[in-house]
Amino acid sequence: MFSILHISDLHRSPENPVSNVELLSALHADVARFGTEVPPISRPDAIVVSGDLVMGLPLGDPGHPGALERQYEQAYDFLTRMATVFVDGDRARVVIVPGNHDVDWNCSRAAMTEADPTGKHVPRLIEAAGGPYRWSWHDLRLFRICDPGLYEARFSYFCEMYSRFYAEARTLVLPVAPHRPWNLFSLHDGRICVCAFNSCIRNDCFSRIGMISQEAIAQSHLELLALARVPQVKIAVWHHDVEGSPFRDDYMDPDTVKVMIDRGYYMAMHGHRHRSHTSPHTVFTSDEFMMPVVSAGSLCAAGDNLPPGVRRQYNMVELREDGGGARIHVREVQANGIFGRGRLDSAGGRSYIDVEWKPVPRGEAMNPPRDARADLSVAEQAEKFLAENDPMAAIRAIEVIGEAPPGYLRRLLLRALDMAGLWPRVTQVLQRAETPEELTLVIKALIHLRQWPEAEARLVAAERSGLFDTTTIQTLAKWLAAEKGIHP
Image (cartoon, rainbow, N blue to C red; front, side):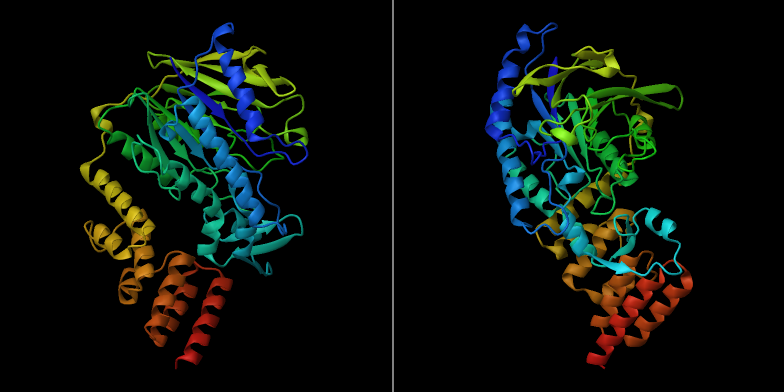
């Protein structure tokens, strides 16, 4: 068997904190007893960390950002020690994804301004996928993301720790990209491939919903198909629940799981619910296909942060050598920080459950066309050059596809052109802006070029299109008027 130590929700409860030394000691003592359990449990060959590395800071916390930096330093120290103790220091065998607590609330709030809800269909605005509006139930106010760059920086502390951790990884199947919503990890000599998804792309101080974009699933799927060795088992990891009561708004659409089954994933692992649980999810296409979804309890939470009757937990996931199933063991704190057998409600109260899967078969007809693989390769190159602050190299890489690349490549091209200050090319690519970000960028370019009539005409056309809200148009118009007044 290949065994995975699955931990989640490492955020330390302020009222009952536990140190790294205490945690490592307790885990080490528990693993040492695995061989005497009935049934026995294999020592871990890899580690999965399904989000919430830190507790985070509330809005307006006077300790920001120093206290947040200290929390991530504690998480980094714990993860590096875990890698050393359990996987011989090979950080490529440690799979990490962000959780909702890893989002910097104070940074996301600084990127927003209050918006006037008068005359707006507020529910439609805040429900729009990828939209800039947020609603605060605490004081019943509408906010709008006015600084997309600062808003994206709400993951900056997590991404910095992520890059630092994997800088010393030895056997990654692909270089990790902390801002990319998916990353691939190859385990067990390529027989197991794990895709680490970011389910927090819509999370901020006012939005709790879990989401994995269709584009992220599609990109990772194409990359999986392009691997030189076909994995025997493919596992998806993210943070959020896929089930929730009508009174919750912090879980993910279960249809996302159906898409993953269709793309050939065998099993999924997540956290967030602070309780070990295993449930099957199915999809009907040419046949019925099934994938077990496994959640881990919280390793460090306490008190009100745990569901009633649940203690701190973690999972051991043993994959069968034939690749056809797994055994899930739940380990739970008994007393005084001592881990032992836990309880799986989904297994009738036993400490383990056996699961099998029926994945969608891979056939030659599923292989992607070569140009789709090429697009993904170009995107990887462009992301690398942008991360290295070399926008011209990114532009040259993307131009291999053509002057008008589609979808994600278009967004990468616009980002590179903005960084390089190639304003004429920006106006050429953005003949018709389709999002508030694109409209802002083209107005920015025309301001730099001092093309005032063209900028005004673009705003008039954008207003008539009905694609943009009044606040966006008015804000850009004020900016344009101010710049025109300074540079007539």
